[in-house]
Length: 63
Image (cartoon, rainbow, N blue to C red; front, side, top):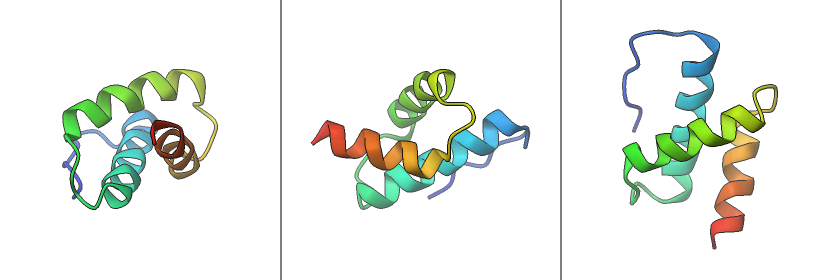
């Protein structure tokens, strides 16, 4: 499930990709708003990394 984002700047593209991957890993059982909060924190630390990879690492660390 992708939440439509109004602006397609690099930050929003990164957040959208992170959210998509997290929701895939969670099989749709995650609060998108909480995931986006986490994604924002992780983007600040990893702006040049693949958001899918960052999401997978954060998912693994959360289990």
